[in-house]
Amino acid sequence: MKGNRKIKFILPIIAIFVPSLLFANKASAGSFGAEIFCTMRDGGNDHESSWQAAYSYIKKQKGGIFKTSPKQAAGQIIETVVRERDKFSYCVQFLDQLHPDRKLQLENNRKEKKRKKQELLQEKESKDYSEETFDRYSY
Image (spheres, rainbow, N blue to C red):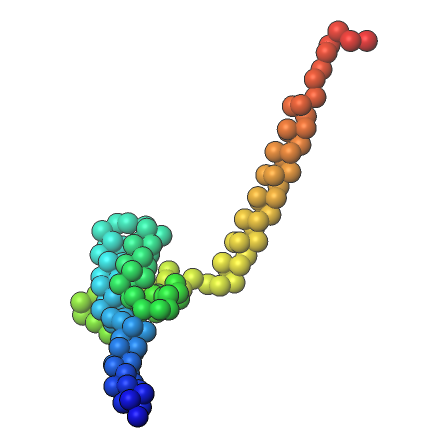
């Protein structure tokens, strides 16, 4: 009987606190993340530094059990800019860089891997060559 009473008391508490832990303050984090991104881009900063600042803020502010992926954070920024287009009208031109062309990205990654492999091979060959000693007087 007492165990039944404890369950009736604990269940409403769990029902109140668990959703707030899972979905804590998502909207305001995305909104201020968009403000950070757009302000930095408008101030002349490059895409990467602006994105990293906004994304780290969104990750930090979201809280909860689940982490925010870069795709989710970019979606939150775009959603905020579109929803409040009067406030962020200067930022619309920068949104295309939040979701880059995936084919182009894959191609660039492949080229980068090939370049690194070639550099490693050249480094190894030059290392092998430099370890050899030449004695010009040996016959």
